[in-house]
Image (cartoon, rainbow, N blue to C red; front, side, top):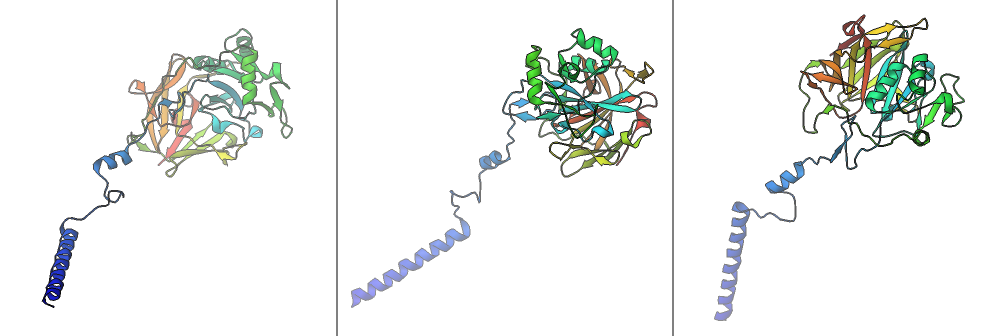
Length: 355
């Protein structure tokens, strides 16, 4: 009996000590399950916050990829008449250049390098300064038709090219829901076939002198500009408005009050950079065709991240490059739209913006 009583007392003492020990551990030395992430180490935090930079950057957008961008750029003249809208393939263009062809009617040059869409157009005719831009970019040039000056340049091999005047119905095809000259199209597959047909090189050899922000860089503050207006002449058809979306951090675009979309995908055009280059224009014939000075450089505006910078532009190794303090101006990675505007009336008169 005494032995039994002694064993019960001893058991109570051991139980009490264990409870005290558990309370001490809970209060002063919390146990962390090493299999959970509730209390990660500093090394774990660094690993979570690390930004992975993909090895290759697209030469005309600065967007990065795991695969190298090796394809030669393709430059296509796109019809911008109201009857040609919405166009096909614009959402895939790395850069779109907009400039006058006759009077105040503008045409587009769509540059494809990082991707080539299934359908591009309506394709329109060449001008001599379109061909000069293609040559400077070392791009394969696609058009349907030409001015007299452009025809001479194309037939004498100024640039590698195909033209709908020679390949209408073969490489180029006509849409039935539009009338000529607003219905000529080409597929990405036929662009490649055209390069094969004329034995043109298909690999990129010339990388442009364009600069881009890194992923971790912030765009420096400058004048706020959430809405941009540009007018070519008095027609609303060539009154373009760009609006900055703070959520997507991109610009949308409209012409004549209609949002610019890609006809094939119904996708709104989204742009990281919108630029304006001022240059001399001269009317050279009774049809109102223009001659543009692409070599002298001049004033410019750069819109990005909802802000505006006054810049300059120069032709560097054939490519029209935005400059800031004498160096290539950094662009936000993504697609760009570049307008050429006349020195008369001038960039300050043609382009307006609001915060």
